[in-house]
Image (spheres, helix red, strand yellow):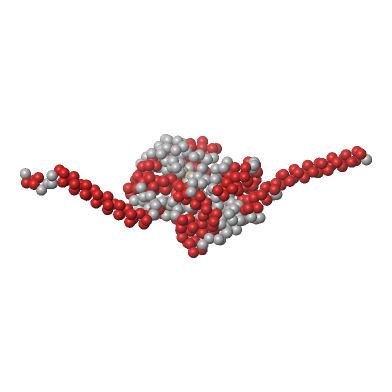
Length: 224
Length: 209
């Protein structure tokens, strides 16, 4: 009995609940009215940020040929996307545009956006030189043993879909893959005291000639 | 004598035909060009409200003429002037016009508000991540020179740049124009003015590609 002594009767409790929700509604209205002009119209929801990513990476994350090749993110591995965003932030991967972009994202948002892109499966946008594809397929599947180039398929998977921190290459833009492979050590792993997974690719990228990089890029760009 | 006259007549007719043929093949320099330059300026440097065509990307001019012909680019001023202008252009004529105007050297309009150029440059080069505004440089290039079907923005006149950015938010010309309608929709009026001012001052830089 003492435990319930102070409890209001049911009707009174309902009254209080109404009062409380009414006060909350008024408080929210006030807060909304006061902060709305300051917030402008930037949409900070996941959908709003995702639309911002889509502006450059394409509505289906298929990538885009801008002045710079903008990579496909559709179907990309979640862990890889998150790792790269962190690498931009920490200046381990050099890219002025993506450094700014990453500054505007908290960890939760990075995760949500990576998940959304991972679930997309756009058609590759194509456009690679077709005559290079056959040679690229050979290199991708068998490597170039005499030049110390491992088979790409060994890590990226036979269908180039990647796994966890290993990126998907299937359907990636031809120009983007070429640019990454020929600039590997100028762009990635820029803080030697803080080595990251980009170290794994460094010797392979170094051993590939430009023509070989182009062949591999042409091949993976056609994969679905 | 009569024979001679007939020969002269044939010769004259042949000359006329030859002249007509030359006029058609030289049309890119003559008739059609003049139809464009009435509005776009005698050296195609733009003449408000018609934008500069000189030095614009050939593939972009070509794509826009197709859009005018198909009535996909549909702001009031487009309907008023460009629909009729493009209506009877053949594909070959469109190709020739685009190549001609792309080959002319542009001059920057430099008619924006110089007080807000720094602000415009900041938005162009870096975007505003906190407001979901992407960096224009990613597609239009470090000197706003454009590439392929992506237009050169450098040195276009202030009013044209401003109106184009506004028109997408007003719902015009959105067909096949992704991602610009969405991007322009994120820009407040003061940011549009800053960008248009900055771009009007960017000088011509011949792109490497």
